[in-house]
View (spheres, helix red, strand yellow):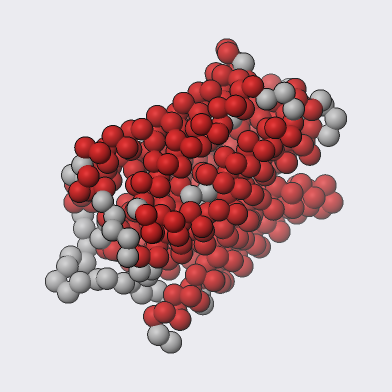
Length: 405
């Protein structure tokens, strides 16, 4: 089998693997607080407190360990790490079906984050065997797998929890992860563009030096955190905002629609934005997407009807959908193949840091200044991110240059 056929086959397999993992990671989100409530006769404050902690600890451990997994993948092979992380992730979720205390759930959620590098490692796996000139389009295609799974996950998780119970939902969710691991066995690992005489392995110090010496590259990575802070700051208050707009009747259902609207927009445009960035330049498209997303989200502060919120969330998803594949394609262009796993690990770590800070910041701002302030701060952060990247690109035009191929 030649490399081109292997690449297409690997992309198809990893698309479905990402679909199962993306769905499994979100299946359990709708009922974590209800699961904690089932452990005993706890106060509402206690349940909310521990639901927040057990939810966040996954991001904390993922933030800490993502670069380490990336480096191990660079050294020993990404396929092996995909298998190990998938097995660890599936086992962590499977065991959650047997816990009977909050602390046991907390520990397993920590290990879930420890092993949660599957999607970022799959990006490195596909990136290193993709020609640079089509990296954006290919990585955008891969991203639609995890997005599709993430959209369907909460709905399937809610249905399964209602019909099968919490414990069985965790067990069935783990089966989906194990299916992903099984799919990985059928992939073929190889790397493109490995030049003779090039280093086979870079130290962490060399990787960091490579990032720091390129101010545009460094900015693109650091903005991963700012983008996630902006995107996740609205998550804690969205259901409450929907309740204000639509009323309390079926608020969970309508909140789900508002959440999913951004995911649908993301799904429709991720691949297309990747192709556009391949043609016109990664940093240029990133700047446009970030500033446009900020401008589009600003009117969310003034909406009076539920449908207006859904439309704004959908358009936001259309724009944000291009950010991840474009950024990873840029990393594919700037980082040597032999260090891409570690670099993408830093990228993932910064994104998880944003996932931690964003909800806390959104809750704080809404508590003191109201819902509208969250939309304004989110929009401002996105616009500022775009302007920072524009300034870095303008200051170092040679480093930002991307020739269409």
